[in-house]
Length: 74
Length: 196
Image (cartoon, rainbow over all chains, first blue to last red; front, side, top):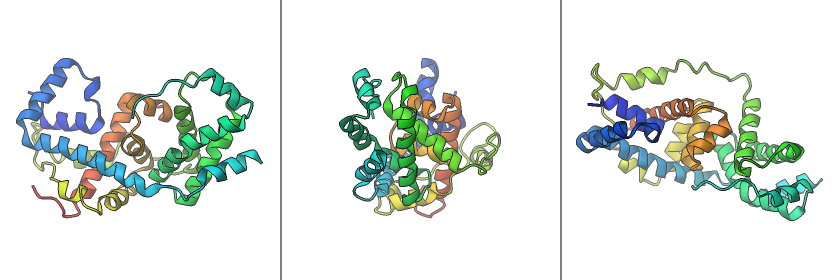
């Protein structure tokens, strides 16, 4: 059976899609049976949602596009 | 975010003619995502805006060489990546070894079972302070991991597009993302919000 360590590495690296169907099936079965790994999968989903929210705090000052276009036209 | 088709030849031709409407369209569509990505890489607001300006200036200078086979977004983000690397010159780190790898390994026993399982961070990640805490933890990431994480998780770009932008293999990108997430996990879990 695939180890928690391998599952965690595959989930962290977003490399599950690049694996064989057999490996993907093993991971899915493992996640169905392992509370800690399914918590990791949930944690990564929550981190993704929160990171998107964090990005919203990085909006530029109003008029960014106009300032860029102004300089490009000079 | 879904993949978008390569740049239409007609639009590319208008850009080459410096058609004001086409240029404004490209800037309107891509300036904010580029700015957010630059901020996500750790540049202060003024530097991020300067960087985005530089990206569009370079884009126009090199437009003749652009064959339109890839998406405009991929090309612009690729320029951003190279400009960011130029500005960070001298901060390059040895990627072969990273202390976070040992921290990750220490969470498992010799058979690969969890010794220190992941914490439940739901309460913290759903809180009002989540964005601020994640930004704080992202500041502790090495530049290349931070950039990989920001493009994937903040901008939501697909793996194939990010690999083109960063000029790395899927495996290399996986290593960057794994290390970034492992570091963020350690940082967030250390803040005392978790319950197991």
